[in-house]
Length: 267
Image 1 (cartoon, rainbow, N blue to C red):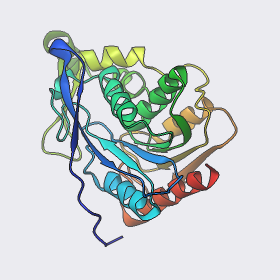
Image 2: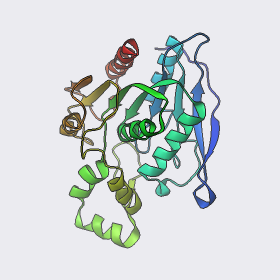
Image 3: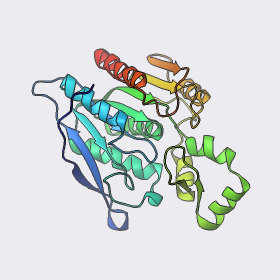
């Protein structure tokens, strides 16, 4: 995995209208001529972008296999326009769907990390309504569906509730950046409208979940809760006993690559 992958130039797509308009950046690797493999679509987590190590490794795998690969930066992230504090699940979902539809793969595998797992599940629901593209599988890494209502709201401290009420947001120290995480009232309220852990989530495809048992951000019990809401067939949950939230170590990357390859063989 040390060989360099050819550098791709970002593409930009305008999403939304009026004051909601923003320019979304994407990196798209075309499939090798004659390839019949599904496209690999990467969906990043909260405050992560398409240049992260796992995203790059998915692109590298696509290049090795000859498959197409689609990555994007949500608004307020990476190379995309828009303010991060305007971000909501609905807004970032709209952007992911716009990028997918603009590239129009016939078949694809969604790979979502943390919040990207939530967006992947919502994208599957929305694409099913619209009739395509065909979803061949999903790999979810430390998935965080409904994290605003299930993991944030129940644990809000009094000062955080006051900050939400008075300022419209609260800050929380980040384990991964000197800049604090910012959670807005809009994000939390919108999250309630995008909940998926309220019934069976019909994805129509096999799913492989990778979850670290030392994840300080998304407890492994949350992954078990997700499995309860997925159809029993074709769902694999892999626990990594010493794995953290990022799952970016070399051995974790190999597990990710293996999970994607496994779904491609089933496709």
